[in-house]
Amino acid sequence: MDLPAETEKQIHALAKSIPDEDLAPNGRETKPHVTVKYGLHGNDPQAVADLLAGEPPLTVTLGATSFFPNGESGSGDVLKVDVHSPDLERLNRKIADAFPHTDTHPVYQPHATVAFLRPGLGQKYEGDDSLAGHTIVLDKLTFSSDDGTTTQIPLGGARRAAASNAPPSDVAAYISAPDYAKALRATYQQPDGTVLSSRDHPQTAAIPPIGTWRIAGDHGQNGREIEQLVALPVDNIEISEDTGTQKHPDVKRYAEWLIAGRAAPPIDVVQTDKGTLKTLDHRRLLAAKAAGQTTINAWVSRTALVGVHPRGWTYELAQSGVQPISIEPAKPENTIFVDDAKALEKIGAELGTKLSPTTVQVYRGRQVGSVDSGPTWWTESKPLAQDFAASVRGGKKRKAVG
Image: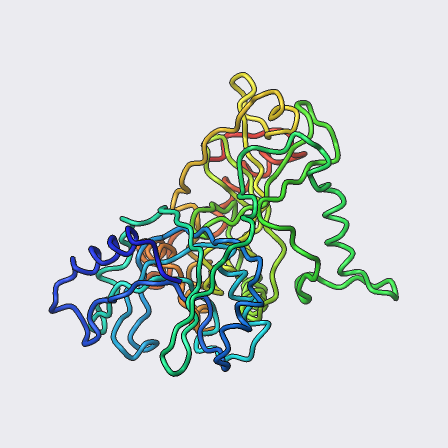
């Protein structure tokens, strides 16, 4: 997919800032773009156009720079700008499911190439966030045939409703939280009455579309709490506790499921009274990182101030005009603990996935892997876990857990 002219200009400027002596023979990317699906066996653009008929333009968000090392590309270290978009990942799966293809990488990592660097220089240029957060709309694909011919495929369908902080006024527009939980449990129930373990069997329940709202079944002091399903960057979520070495095999198993295309149920995320986002679903979050994912689906419960007290945002508060507090960036030191970082590096190496550069910077900055001593999971995470548990107990009250 070609990028807007202004975005292309910004990526060219980023490439031009790299000295010539740091470039590999392929040099700077001349036509920055985002690949939706590579390796299709056929040469029929009409078949792809028919498949994508009615698909709306895609909204994508640019991230920081990262790189593919020389061992993966064979052309030096490939410097790239990461691209985040649940719809782009959905389109990749849709095309892959419909047509024969050969995958050269186990995990789809959307990106726009900046330049080809001499081997070993990728780390020098990763982490540049000058384009991070830029949101653009892509309204056409280019099908490239083996003989070099190209065909434009427009995306002209109606645009899907974007995730929004404005919850619907009609209660019927929400899904019921108790009903949703019941549907998840039902997938593990067997005809003979046995119940499968979620640790050994992937979830098969349908995942609602991004932007969906759900509502609690019970009324608290301030009404029924509401949550929205959104795609969150994996490195902007704080965790309440260390996973624990005994559960690291689960993390690897979950990551293998993700790589195989088995979508995990969304994690639950609560906004702290400091504005950061935090989860108890640390295994699934760590698995997403290990699988090379840049985003993870999450049910996000926002926090609002009732007077001076932080409370879970409810339908009733929203309809009365009370807005949630702003979302603040996660504290990097609270996004991963030492034991998990060591496990993440090991699992990523075993699965052949490339970890997010932000995650790498966090745990390398804490000398993970180079020291054997330091805070244990208990001393590091117990206070956070206790505060977080108190904040979400009953789903009604928030405490200072930021």
